[in-house]
Length: 260
Image (tube, rainbow, N blue to C red):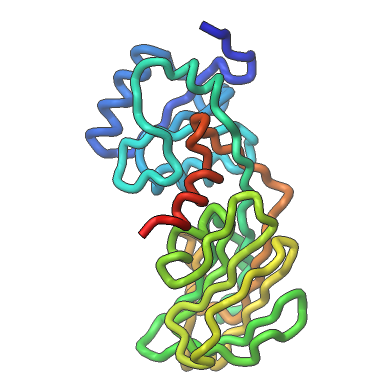
């Protein structure tokens, strides 16, 4: 048995509230012990993609690597669950580095808000009326008016999630790109979005904000009645996701493009 390097000897387990995840938590803690996440070298998350996103948010600024095991519903970001051989798997795991999006918004009262997203930043209409949005990239107007249910900016890691379900492109994880994808566009009818460099700043102005209110959402953080939204990728934050050899996030995203 190969010995873990010092940086991944102390394990902290986190789990979702499902019976399946809690049972796994009890077994793994009994076998491997459990330290406080603050003192851990590595975080092992037990659940589905929802728990993984929550875990990434909680430990976003710590630099701690995160290894997920699937004990939930959707497990695109998780490894297979096995009770035995965890330390050997952690030792052999391959790291994928991802960066979050940072969303700056100004709401109807003029108050500013900042939130980060692993998957996507989305703008949605709040009422029965379609949103009217002015789209700028790096300060240059690219679309004077988009009439739609909304629009999103997605990371490569999030490109196979909500972005894909709305017709957006799948982006290989190592690509320096972001997807700008409309949600149920009405005008212009033929515009289906754009691929942008991950250095770009996307600015969205809400037109007729009083009459057609719009909410902005960064993963699960929502700001209502926004007037102005800036979105960019935060390259200052590196998050390390660990995957078993042969089952990296790159491989999963590539495989997704050939699924039918």
